[in-house]
Amino acid sequence: MRFAILGAGAVGGYYGAKLARSGHEVTFLARGPHLTAIRERGLQIRSPDLGDFTVHPPAEDDPARIGPVDVVVLAVKTYANPGAFPMLAPMLGRDTSILTLQNGVDSTAELAQAVGEGRVIGGTTYIATALTGPGVIEQTGTHRRIVLGEVFGEAPGLSRRVEALQEALSGADIQAEAVPDGRVPIWEKFIVLASVSGFTGVTRLPIGPLWADSFCRAQLLEGCREVERLARASGVPVAADILERITMYIDDIPPTMRSSLLIDLSAGKQIEVEALQGAVVRRARTLGIAVPVMSTLYAALKPWASPRS
Image (spheres, rainbow, N blue to C red):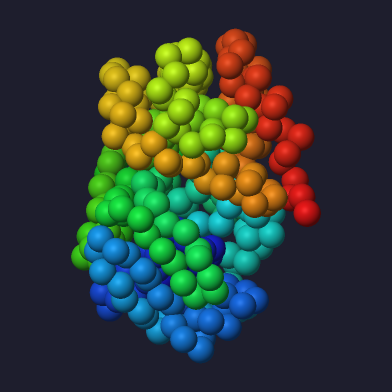
């Protein structure tokens, strides 16, 4: 397959490198020192557990020089969408699909408004990577999981294009799972991410101290319950035991884990509060559902939404 990676940072860059290494034609959209580094030295993946490697793919800052591809992987932060969506047009052919790996539950609908529902494949990812320097991505751990599926239509179902994309990802040593309803994994991740990112961001602490404190732990899980109720009211059939799964998941997380929101907040960068806590509050207001824990997290984080020097 021919891929374009829109958002060649820690997540998009990693998956694009894996695809390029396995023989797919992959072009990265990048800019600044990152673009220069990829062109001059290649894209380096450092992974103590899975092994280091370097690929030398083409990289551009102008999508018009890429042209139509089979799949665009959309991996920019959600707040970058207004600038990213116009870049898609030159890369869209008649049958081009766009796989979104963004946080939150609004991304697929926003993307569909820009390019049409028929091009959108919903996806979510579980991975720990960081852009540690221009052209250098460091992976901690071994998770490299993508769950993907159709998200539009009354009964989305497992389509041939999703199966083909899953096969390409799996062939690139990516733990890819194709599902009939892509909304479910997106919301199941959102249930835990909105609460965990909110609590770690507000307290400026990694997950360990929060999870070890019985009161903080209970409030964090109550935040998850609020988002779970929102998912069910939205008609998304998340797992009946989703809270038990979340508890087991957090039990296994290293206590030093910091959410990407906390990492960005600590660095003075823009944070995805609107796509996470803000999305919960807005949807809850529309549906008439009380979300006091998530509303409090949103109020505490909203003033920090913009980048700071």
